Amino acid sequence: MECVWVMILFLQWSLSGAQRFDLEGGGTVVAAPGSDVTLPCSLKPHMSAVNLEVKWTRQDLGDKLVHHYKNKQDQTDKLDPSYINRTSLSIEKLQQGNTSLLLKKVQVSDGGQYRCRVDSDQWKDSVNVQLRIEATGGTPNITVLGTGVSGGVLLQCESRGWWPVPDLQWLNSEGAELPAGVKESCEDDGGFYVRRSLTAHKSNTNTYICRVKLGEVKKEEQIDITDHLPKPDYTTAITVPITLILLSALVCVVVYFIWRECVERGDEDHLRGMNFTEAQWTLVEYTMLKSEKDQRQSPCLQ
Image 1: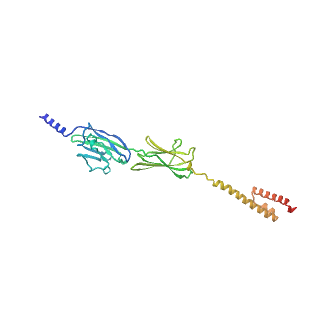
Image 2: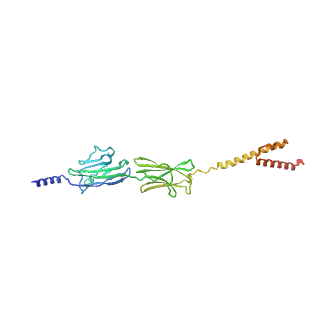
Image 3: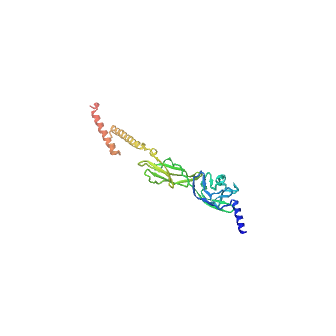
């Protein structure tokens, strides 16, 4: 009689579709912000999961409910608002025992640990999936901001769409890292935006490189600052000599008229009291001698 009851219970369990299963999948999945990603989870051995209950939760956020499937339909009550209309299970795949979750339009805040749990009337199992958000940003963009206080060229390099925060370096043409400004970064739905400035000076090549690196991925851009270097100022070099020449000429004119006045008044000794420089005295003597020579040669005095 006891064996009969055991057989009856086994038949009821078999007719109800109940069967022992394990879940496989798990591991780590990498996705970029804005993309769609599938979190793997499936039954082993393969069997239909249409009549089972499937729950996807966020373990790192206190079992926040991400997706709930029960009674052959999605249950939207108690779902976390940030996941509404962004998750789905495929009915066709459920028939094959595939309970993987499709997460649409991945956000940087979606990164974390998820749990897939499948329940039947007589059995249940779960598996964890780690979602890591990682994105490769665009090629760096270098902008010339102007001339620095020291006479160099002020450069700024920026790049968008990275996750997590990448490293940003300024290098010379030989690949040696240069001291630069503080790296700035900010986060948005598309990932991280980074930028860093550098005051570049004239060099053998005038070439500078901006490199953005995340793990094994790196992107870089270079610039030649030759056309942006400050132009030489020739104004002072020209103005100073001209000014000196004009001043010298003015002094000569003044000395000449003073000498003429003294000669006409017969007061040449008055010149000896003048505070002239050696060059000015030389000019006075030359002028006096030349004047006497001109007077001797003048036809009016013969």
